[in-house]
Image (cartoon, rainbow, N blue to C red):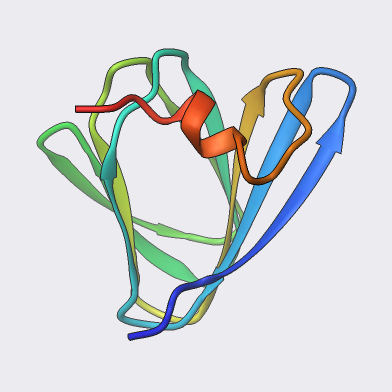
Amino acid sequence: MKNPEMLHHFSDGLYAKQSNFPAGMAILKHTHDFSHLSILSQGKVAVLRGTEIDIVEAPACIEIKAGLTHGVKAITDCVWFCIHATDEKDPSKVDEILIKGD
């Protein structure tokens, strides 16, 4: 399966990663050191937060707590945004800064 289409949006102190992905594709489990918001603007997904899985339909805004393992699997084609507070504006560096390593 190919990678989701990623678009990067930057503003003063804010970053939004837009992921456009087809039904059946998943964003792998990961964690962050800081809480952030995720917005489902289109579609239906299964959201893993810790040990809980919720089915979410757009439009929806979800808080992801700091240190919580989470992931998303598309049930239908969807558009998902992760919103983070950061001053980094280089798309090649934001994941390195925001995603907690194992």
